Image (cartoon, rainbow, N blue to C red; front, side, top):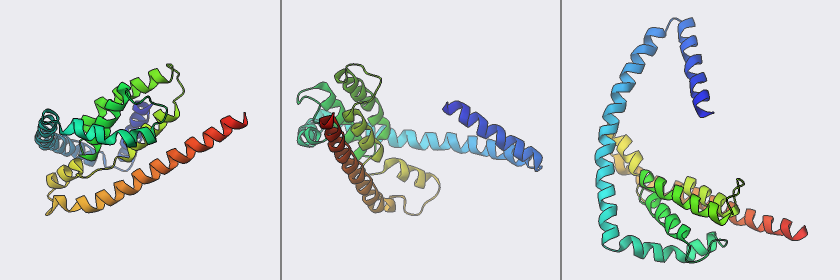
Length: 198
């Protein structure tokens, strides 16, 4: 569906540019954007390599395991339907830690594994459980101490102070995560009440 949507928007853009006589500008912009994309990928590769390396050091030093243990009470509150020692907790903790450190690319694989484990707990149903929805909301709201991607983008496009976004980014993600958690808690309670009425 998404491919069709992108294809439709590209087609509309080309037709509009042709009708207004600006098809040459579209071609120039496409070439310039391709060059910028390659440069940005090289910049991101260096930053990703550094932070992924730091994550591996933190894991071998036991820091990630300690953070995972520290998150257990939070996970028990957010995901009451997940057994305490279930594998899903480990994957969800790793996902949250990666997101907090601004490593969205590292968070994605463990996030997918967490969803697989949550689906098993949901007996393989095609309808998402409350725990699955809660995890998705928290993953999307993405509390971040260090917004690595945004810092990299700002650096790539010549920002004088790429890291000046950290404070406001932290405030924004705290608010979005708090709103997501509040929504999940309220939805879970309302869902429980509806179940009681049945």
